[in-house]
Image 1 (cartoon, rainbow, N blue to C red):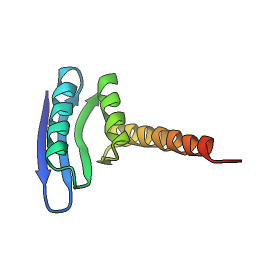
Image 2: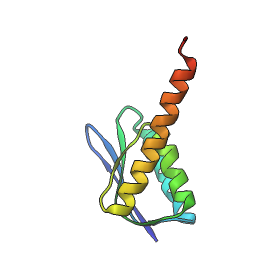
Image 3: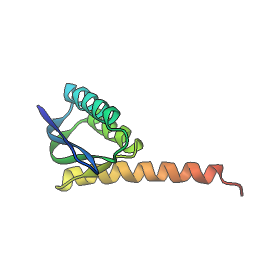
Image 4: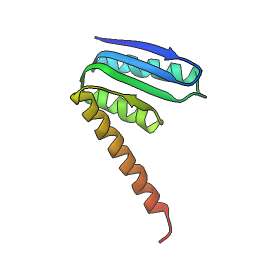
Length: 105
């Protein structure tokens, strides 16, 4: 089970996730993310993963897509911190690699 809470203030949109980010819950989290972001496209966005207790492959893929959209992450605990570090590092390496390919030698 996954609980999704949206926090919107003048400076930030935060989608707080609590529980298991797996299976059908990933679809619901993604739906909430898309709706919230489309209604508030001018604000920075982040996912609060401090309450996430489990991630499956679909959950990891969702986090990768959110990272590619420029979102930040709040995490705590070894598991979520490790996933966030893996996702952000692989995305950063991919973006930097693409920039190097485009730059003239």
